[in-house]
Image (cartoon, rainbow, N blue to C red; front, top):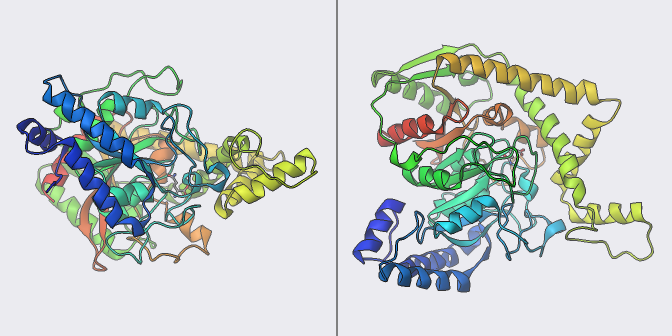
Length: 476
Ligand code: GLN
């Protein structure tokens, strides 16, 4: 019997000879098979991972030094390239496309001897909050199969939630790692913009996108961040700042300063149980000797509109490369001229939500409307950045919910895109400002679903964020 608690414990068991990588991989393959109906995995690399596990076992038994992620079983969201493996961003336009290189993040995991077990379902091109916009069909929440797992990294969250891998990677442009983690009762970290290279991550909105980590405990998440973060010659936006040994520096005695927004916690759209749980947590944090204060924040109602104007604008440009000529699906209609060919390939290849966003983005960038929408949204982004900077002059962290409601029923919001967009109110802030943020599974709702606390820290201060998360998780 194989049971996973943490990477550290797994490694200790491997060294003691109680388990093997092969046993671990066999366990996960069986689990993936048992939970197939959840639809979290798109492809499972069965043959390959069994082979890799055997090689790692032999290497370890021969007494050779082992990597930091030796035998750690990881799933990848279907927007992260893994050489010679299919990648499609859960879109028909890219179905059967094979990666010709691996993302830098993946290269670094592999260099530390991780085992990539398969690719995970998500909303098409990472656009969505429920994992219902996927060419492979929806993903089910393992805790209540009538509910959504959140999105867009729904498959990544369910794979960890249902025990189908040890950790997984997602991408977070406006909450896609934190919100599914919240809905599924696991941890989800979105690092600072530029902490992990985006090379090999299929772009949605390039000035927002960041690879994130989903896991069961803070030391595992910290270890993956430590392995993947840092300078990369293939991504000019990634930071050259030194990468701390996050996983080894998690303990702290420090008393911190937390800010929260009364406007956020008393927002009419927020579920009263979520508001009450966070307020209660605030009192407990104070009792631990930390300072927690309410600060003014006037921008809450502007950030979702700003997010959707800016990200759709970037998406309309990023997704123009999928034209039926260079990649993936191509229309086979006979005898059409070029513009018609593009039109047909894109109309058939893209799903409804992606088309809606490309059109919205093209509209806000059009000559007549550019200043009214795009320029104004950029101003909101700048105001927000300034505001956040001022807060972090005085505080270490900002506390927020992740989502105004716990996991909703499948289909509930599909006909109302605006309601769906507005549910991103608490997560998009971190992406607009480029700061790190984490979702911690601390609470349970009376509908019997989990929900989490969101903590944000200053740019590149993942170390403090992980330390406080470790502390908060310990006193659950
Ligand atoms: N729900 C958000 C959206 O649909 C977040 C997406 C993401 O972070 N990739 O845009």
